[in-house]
Length: 522
Image 1 (cartoon, rainbow, N blue to C red):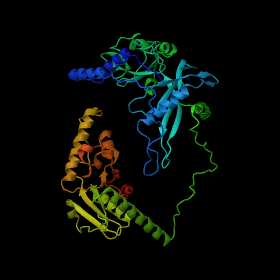
Image 2 (image 1 turned 90 degrees about the horizontal axis):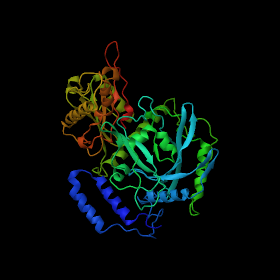
Image 3 (image 1 turned 45 degrees about the vertical axis):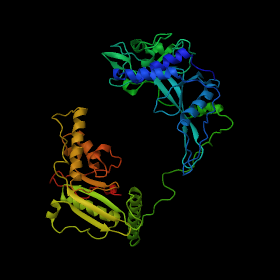
């Protein structure tokens, strides 16, 4: 294809792009140096450059296709252009003509958007488009990648508030707007059928375009047509949409209700995909169609047999516990590289308890879950549990070491939040950060660390025992995960064990035994 931009247009666009990347004053000298270097050696358009779209060096060790990172975008853009070259899609309400839409830096694949379609609802006309997403995907153990075509509905916001005379935009959020100029933005540049994407947000007492996109770049350039005014679009969104989609404000559920549903029927999807398949070259073929299953019911084909009579029941429980120990040992060997071939792996776990009843219940549950023999060296007196008690069991597959310590220093209580029922995000973040630091110091006092992830079973109160719902949510999901294997700098920790809740009876205030979630051990 020929060079899409004249030299003058390319030079102006590069300058606006560089300025938009870092507009801060401290980067002006670097911006000037970079612009000068680009002008001395500007990028040159080359025709006939071969680009491999699908073939790659080799699959992964498991035999799964491993395309190059650039192929995920280039190959889908190539297929999208072939779909755009097809005749418009005919349906009962007319014909769909698609246009390409740019994708963000975190997006993969191509996106095609149809013209805006009008739906006459009970409150007046509503607008929407049909969208095709094309992505390149891999299938486990398949050396060939696949194109995936997904269709859905994109709705547009056109209902103006009777009080303000404007379109309502959610506060604190950026709203996406599709733009399509009637003439080329840049003098001398060819016309483009692609949509441009810009975003609106609240700024200086009103809504304005957000920098970092077409709006910020094109405003500083000499344009053949003025950039759309944000207030003009917000006061007459339907007019801009009906004018060949010069501007279309994307709808979100925070804007209120919309009378157009969010999806397509199965038959509609099938017909659109069948139309898009015409763009496939002869070297590609569609995957086999799915076949409706004749199976009914939810009973699995290989249900697990649960023996109910002795001694088969005891033997089955013993076999399952042995399988749990073997699976745990296998995982520990792959998580830690310090274990020699003849050495048994060690499962390190912590029990942070508040009441003796829940402590003993959790220990007994662990013993039963892994079928451990003996008491692990449990002390004879209750006073011994005032400090840290280490229980240890030996099995043919692994060593289990459980460190029992009372949860003190109010670490299981409310977060240190100001008085009141509503708290700012900054206050909650600060309270959680302080609790994590306290918990880290509490767990590292013993100087015990492990190269492999460790488990923690923490006894906390039920939700109604906390004065703040924020404390309950973060106690369950956050602070219980501070183990020596996870440093504070790496939070949030990907190896987060599940905290368990201890219930209290209303009459006596004592916790009821048997309420720990012992499934979090392995």
